[in-house]
Image 1 (spheres, rainbow, N blue to C red):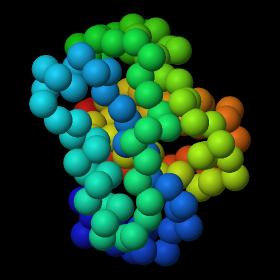
Image 2: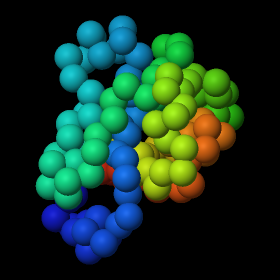
Image 3: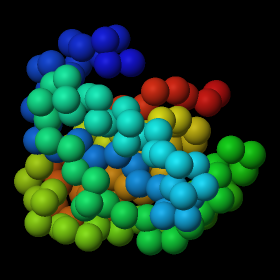
Length: 130
C-alpha cells in the first residue's frame, strides 16, 4: 500500500497520522489494531508523527460488514471522541483504516477531527469493500 501511494505520501503536507481506533474490548479480542499497524509503517517510512492517544472510541460498535447502509451510519454515530483536541488544531491529518466498507467510520472520525479544529483530514485505507 505504501509503495503504491509513494507519490501521494511523499509530497503530502501531513503533520499527523491517526489510525482509526478500536474499542479496548475489541482490541483485546483481536490482539492488534490493523489500522495502527498500517499507520505505524507509514509514519516511519515518511517521518510523519503518529498519534494514537488523541482519537478514541467512546463505545463499542458492531462490525460494519453485513449491516445495511442506514445501520452502518447509525452504528458509528457518536462512537468517537477526541481526548486531546489541542493536538489536531490547524493540522493536516492522514486518517488510516484497514477497510473502507461504507465510509461511515472514517466519515465519523473525520467529523470529530474537523470539529476540533483540524485543517484537513484525508483518508487512506488498505482495501475497499464493493
